[in-house]
Length: 460
Ligand SMILES: [Ca+2]
Ligand SMILES: [Ca+2]
Ligand SMILES: [Ca+2]
Ligand SMILES: [Ca+2]
Image (cartoon, rainbow, N blue to C red; front, top):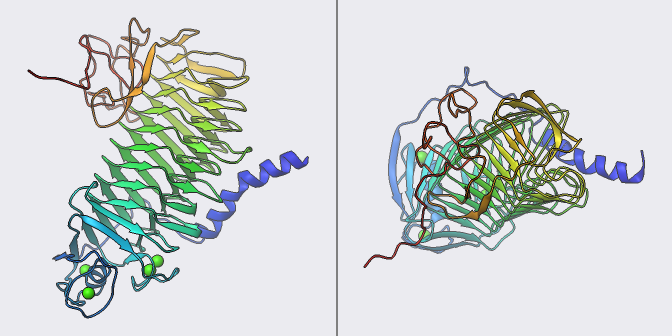
């Protein structure tokens, strides 16, 4: 093994080592065996000071509220918790300052959630949680069900472990709605490290950094899963897997955009999404655009037994200095249906260094020798430009790349209908606009209409 290959091998196995240490001894339940005894819904605990404190001055800080919810008893001026409580956090900036990493009772450092709870802000723009110590902001412990809504988690840092903004333990179930996870930093999973079942809707994960390992935005562990719906993962940086990364986990991207994420190691792969060790990735009605990786797979990289399902995906404008600007897979299965792989860049194989199992009706612009298209060739277009517009607001809650002019992707989809991997019809495009327009749906995440969407409307 040359020193270059040894370094590459080391980089590639770092996440494996890390996750075996993290999750290797955990036994994961299947969906069929999953049971959680729901505890009764509890109190509404309203925070009434922005100070980070645990004292007896008569008010209710966020830390005191978390302790009330965990202990089901009154802590300082907070209402006593009583089961699955709701913590209300009014508009304001809450700077966490009581330091103490590695503690799990919400006494110091991160706010540890030990019992089912809902954490509700006012809006993500108005309720801002920040940290000025070396620890993340929230830690959801094993088997806890937690919902976060309308908050911004900003500036957490966890430099010895993972999850700068949020960490979840095994068997947790977490829902994040209408929130921002921004500018957090960690060794692994700059924004989030997830070991449970997580769903994120109408939220943005942006400008987070993984300093030593993978997953600038989000890292998902072995047996864990993350589902993104109407959400954006953008401008994150990791050593590898700049946007999202998993080892033997599941990532499902629905009506969402993964954009402008980057890898910092020259030998790293997977700028937008990185999947290794038998992972399962689905990108449905979604856009992967503008991501970069030095070594390969600027958009998506998959390795060692992973499965990728691309259904009405648009994978465009990603880049690499190595091979496979859009897509790079090795010993992985890549199923592709009604999807666009175009306008990516790289020195040898701009769009693809992969063996694709076509399910028909794909547009793959640059069909080089390293980009093998097996499977169903019906409706497969190569060596044509899809005429994509720039990634921008075209309506809906996420940015998309419109089909402009006489794009060959328009009405190029499967005449039997655009579907998800479970063969369920996709009745809207990524933006939520009706699909199909006309008799046949379009290839990719965007369904062109006969009228042009104008983001700015000036009324008389
Ligand atoms: Ca107090
Ligand atoms: Ca409680
Ligand atoms: Ca903790
Ligand atoms: Ca703590």
